[in-house]
Length: 240
Ligand SMILES: O=C1O[C@H](COP(=O)(O)O)[C@@H](O)[C@H](O)[C@H]1O
Image (cartoon, rainbow, N blue to C red; front, side, top):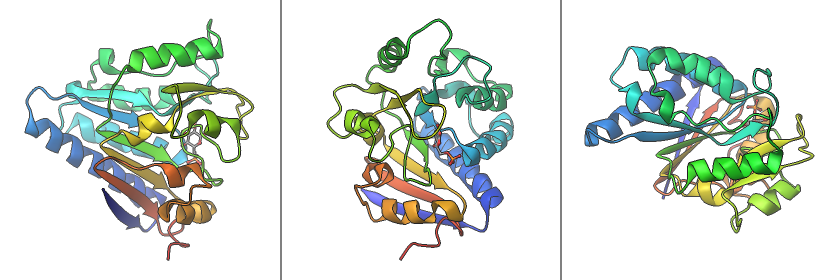
């Protein structure tokens, strides 16, 4: 399993680099097989928003067939449809103009009319045994990935030995308190895991993750084939 590191000057050039990297990898996989549907798991967070904006434009006008991409999410805030806290909706708005097959777009449920545990179970059923070609993950300043937080029940329930593929998260240390998250076995089954972080506030968590410190969830994720770190200089500042 390879670990790759890409460092950019700032958050904007980082987002552009990740977006270009996605186009490169997705088109490579699509070229290998005419029928291949590339499964990409998206993340929420600040830098991801920038990536999705750029990716929407690149997918509309590049080598990728957007109709052969399946989109999934690593985590979601359990809030009503239309809430500005949702991870999926801004990404879908940014990417849909590129011409996605909506049947292959799999947002996690919102809180409208379902309970949290039921929502997590429904997403697990939808996910089945899907293996992601690429799983994008933001890193929180505390080292959380998806909605698996350090020193929190989410990490116990969603750790390497998790029984479920998708869990309900309550009392999240970062608001909103109720969330849905993939667990480590699903993330770590991905062909490639891409960790993306920008800003000095992420530097300590990134350094721990890079040296695979198990005290932070980000230090416990990896891809089957490769793990990529996509960082700006500030987030990379504490790397040895
Ligand atoms: O709440 C969340 O936070 C993390 C990190 O977000 P960032 O804004 O600090 O980059 C994100 O990866 C996760 O998907 C999201 O739900």
